[in-house]
Length: 393
Image 1 (cartoon, one colour):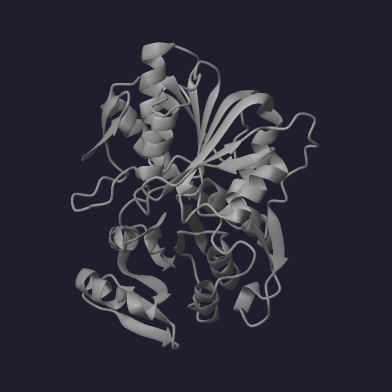
Image 2: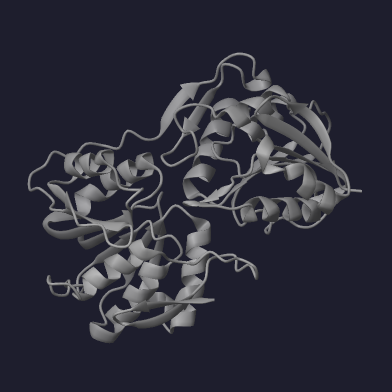
């Protein structure tokens, strides 16, 4: 566990899930910069946090935890509101709040798909990697923002671009940035009065091209923030072209489902199967359900779960896992998520059950699968991608 030092005290924080060998912290210099600014350690003086405060896009609950404890000590106001698209962020936030001594009732945890508050006095934003997710959330929150609302965003300098500032300008009002401090920057936005409110352009839908098996020409639905939401990513395309042909009653899991196109393809290929779609993103699960409902027969069984990999699936109950694992956690490159997906798959699979994984060649997933399953077969490959199959013995 690492400790975050703030003007209001120290907080022991961890990511979720807590991994013994994880060296990644639950905060970075962008979080520290924003907290220092709010406390008034620079020349601006402290920010009034006694009204309705919303924290959007907090990575692991660092901002939420520090602010919740401070506000309870100072104001005892209405609960802070955290809005996130990540189930893992919510789990980390709950754990960090308990660790920091804050009552979990001091924070209302809301997802990116939930209805936002009616009024916001202070809006604090951790700039996400996805500009589309920021666009969608600003559109959704704009009606609750008023001319007196304090709007401050924070991010690493590599996360804040001209396009980011233009987005704030277009949706909320005049925007400026701070100087960079320890490779982090603040964004200040002054909500304009009487600005016309336009609806979010999300979700987006598009038709898939030919050559993708059962989903060729089908419609895919994408909420904001989904990986490659405006086009089908090449890894998923490669898996769809080589999807296993199966039949009969079986339980299939689309793990890290994104927009659900892989699980939908499996359901269309084998109507007797039961598909479970799992992701840690609220928007991904909503997209997967929308994609599935758009294309599958209404009577086709399916389940849509938020979760940490396969932790919610009973052991020995799955026949096939289809997986295109991520190799980033926000800005950090890591195989921790993929490893949890692989170990979770092995536990969830029945004897004889199969895990199919698509990934970039250089990631070396075959070594991990051989170590875990004792076997790994290359089903298909091209100069960039490899499709692997591991069987639980």
